[in-house]
Image 1 (cartoon, rainbow, N blue to C red):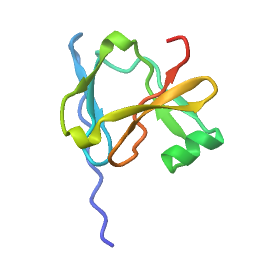
Image 2 (cartoon, helix red, strand yellow):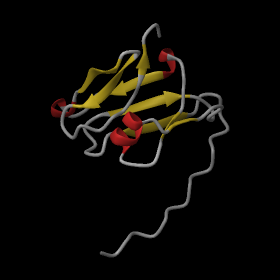
Image 3 (cartoon, rainbow, N blue to C red):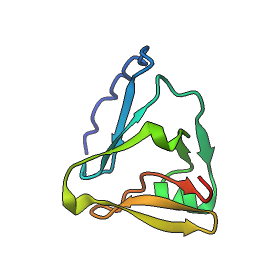
Length: 107
């Protein structure tokens, strides 16, 4: 099959009120994060993260709960909170099963 050409990455926002948007594969669960630019990225290559992401590792950006907001959308894609490890839960799209967040116990 023919692959789409790579897309250029957008310029990093400069404003202190910049938003980063994301969501699941089917588009039913969407969110925004209010951070001016990523200050930390984390990568995990444990068996579970590789299994959930379908890749050799999973990458995420930590931020405070107050910086995160779900964007209302399709009710069939409501994110559900699922315990996936002894130390945390993940939001998973109820429609396409995409893994969206991890929330560690005590956060």
